Every structure is written in C-alpha cells, then in structure tokens.
Length: 329
Image (cartoon, rainbow, N blue to C red; front, side, top):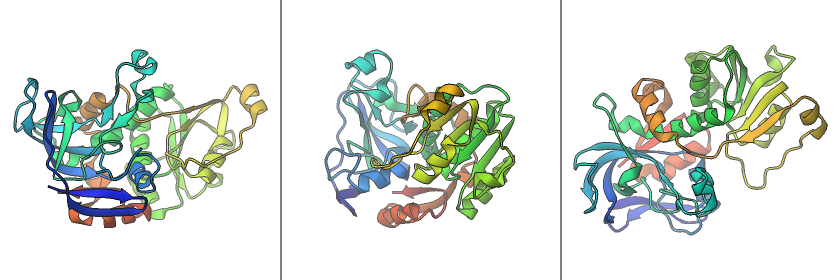
C-alpha cells in the first residue's frame, strides 16, 4: 500500500509499505482523511518517535475493511474515527487513571504506523463509530478536538472567566470554540498571522490583535492559554495572568524552549501554571461534540491534499499556511 514515511530526520517520502494485518482485537481502517499537526513536525525533526522510519498520522478516520478474530463490536463497513492513544494499562500512571502519562506511552502515527496511508491498523477499542450525518472526510478533526477537551478538563473553567488565547491555528480556534461554550465572559485571541486572526474574528471573539498590549485588560485574564509553543508567546502569556488566574501550556514547545517565571508573584497572587498532554478520557466526548456541530469543518479544514503531496502538505503547515491541512489517500 502507499504511505507517507518519515525515513530519517528531515526526510519525508511517499512510497510503498506492507499492507497491515490485524491482530485478534485489531481492525484495518481504510483511511478517508488524515490531519497534520505540530506533532508531525516534531516527528520529522526526529523528536517524538523513538525510532525512524515511521508512517506518521495520528488524526484520522475511515472505514473498517478487515477485523481480527476476536473483534465483535465493529462490523466491516463501519465508519470510524480512531483514538491514537496506546496505553500499557499496567504502569503506575495507567493504574491511577492517567494513561496519557503512561510510562510506556505510545501512539498510532507517532511510535507505530499511522493514518498517513491508504490503510491503518488500530485496536478495535480505539475506534468510535460515526453517526450517519458526520462525513468521514471531516472526522479527522475529532482527535485534535479531543486534545482541546482534555485541556478544558485540566482548566476546570469557571463561569464568567475572561480568557486569552495565544495562537489562532487549529488548536487555538478549537480552544476558542470551547471557551465560548463553557461560559466565558470574554475570549480574546492574539496571533501575528493576520489570516488566522481573521478566522478567529469570523468565529466570534471579544477582541483580536497581534499583541496583548492592543487589548484592553490591564488587570490581566483569568485564563491564559498558549496554543503556539512559541517561547515569546509563552513568556508574554505568563505575564498576562490575573490574580488567582491560570496559565495553561497547551501548545507543543520545542524540547529546548525555556521561559522565566516569577516565583514570588506565583505565590503572592496564587497563580496556577499547568499543562495538558494529548488525550485522556476525552475522545468519545469530542466525537459527540463534533457530531453535535461544535466545529464547522468548512472553517477548520483549509486544505485537502492527496497523499502523494504529504511532504508538500507538511511544508505548508510548517510555513503557517492555512488552518487544518488533511491528506486524502
């Protein structure tokens, strides 16, 4: 079958790989669409995947075309979205219910072959059926939405909060949509990319600007979310948190990124600094929210490119062009 392959650091090609064969509790999914995200850029840089080569693609949906002998909950022809999380269920973190902190953490499309291919292998337990009105080609958005849902689980957002989001790419826009639906009093967005900022304004924001100084909230924001991973944005965001507020590190920063904190201010103003890692008990809820129309796929998906153009799609994403880019096998 045809697949995108990260062969070595910085080298991505499209070529032939063996067809997947399901184990007893696995299914083969014919991929309808696979989304790209910042994690894929890190994989290209050799940062996340423990070994290369690897077929990337952890945001995907498709149709079940083959199943293992012990699979009973899925039928051939079922349309599914796939949670890429692979937990060991044995380590201390898994036993405590924190599978996203699994000491043997793995994920489809990160540590094992993923959905940037014609076919992908997945545990049957990781597949969520799609209702009839949800297009399979749009359902690649469910995985990033599930990360955003996890972010809001961590925030435990209060009604009436004033929220500031750094970044209006896919993840920033998803956090915007969830902020609007969790009772925020205001939601402001900061981004240096005017086209992305225009999309945030289109979705409905209280304020949007290239820098937080342009927004009128000198007392700061109750919730500040970084959805960029950019050290400058993170540093600025930490300084914008209001008293008793919370800063959420949601964007994926480079390993070497460092910022400065003010320990006395954190103590004196009771500021919370926290993070949100991937998916945890949030995938099925995200699928239900998606089916309920929390996101408009036509707004979020800017590019649908053939699988042959995967290297080009990755370059476009790295250059900050478009919003969510998906490849279609």
